[in-house]
Image (spheres, rainbow, N blue to C red):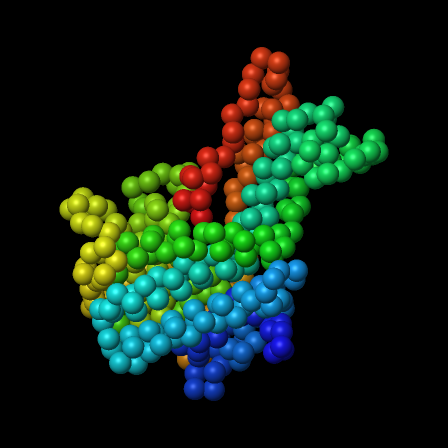
Length: 350
């Protein structure tokens, strides 16, 4: 058996190299911007054993190796677009980019954090709904715990009703299970958009540790959130001089154009570069970055001096806190609490 791969790029090295110099060095800005260094792409966005799963009827690094196959295919399509100036793409190449974008959307630490925070919020709401007097039964039914001591019951209750609970840590198995389920379902949300390619001659763009950015629909209220279905657009910087915008589906829906025609690339175009397009890509990368902005070493000056703080918050749980408060005041002999999550809607907002 070959050696197990331990060091995993959560943003692929072939992608990072498109923003690196000839020595494979890339600029890394740590939010909020005080630390700015240059590193090898070999050691950038690397996490130890991030995708490895033990106990399956497959090698421990099965997922990392499968991702590598997708990356190899995508790298060849990148080479066509970036090195040979091919555009639009043939359907197979276009699908390869869509699969890569969907994979990148689902594979990173942000998605694993999302799972942990959502699981924590829903578990707390379930405990609060069960009530303090039913915690032993809840713990037995849900987790197989038996004979909880009084202090353990109290600790579980306080975990449920006190705000700012520490999110549960999600194992790689749970993350990879979700990814295997969602990836085939997610690709269509990338394929089904008309794509616009912009090649910049004088302007440069940068990327980040979460390079697939969802652009909110300006006609929607901010509280509605943004997901693959509802985003006005999706940006993916391809290199320091090329950006891909997966544009709104509204025009093709309004014109009653079939998904197959859009997915085949019939409506893909190339737009002239502009400062506004460059700003759109860079603003999206700043908003979507969790910890790092990534740029070509010669483009350090275009990264803003003032950047947001790093964030690990993926789920707004303020509504859950309100529900927990309400649950504690409800009379469950008279009222049934509705299911707090519509699973289909929850998926569409990923």
